[in-house]
Length: 90
Image 1 (cartoon, one colour):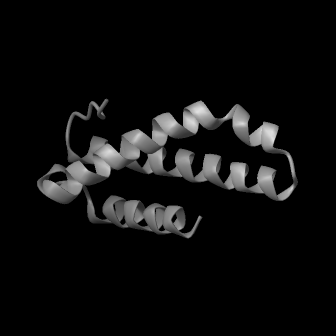
Image 2 (image 1 turned 90 degrees about the vertical axis):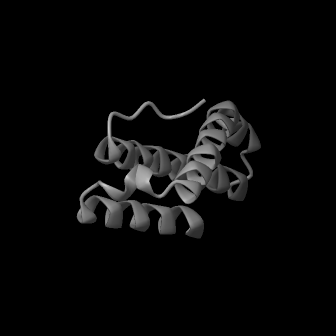
């Protein structure tokens, strides 16, 4: 599974959406466990796994081929860096 991006700008936009969605799911699952509601965390497990695999795949692609996002506007690449930092914090 991979992103189907038209260009660097589209790829960065999709990566931002993917990262924000995955961050939200993981944060929700952590909260559910903290609140002793593992069944709530389990309800999103399949989607979280799917997005985590896609994120892992796309992150590796971008690391090995930086040109995939190099053509995106600087502000958009900075936004990707910010959402990635937020993901890492979660």
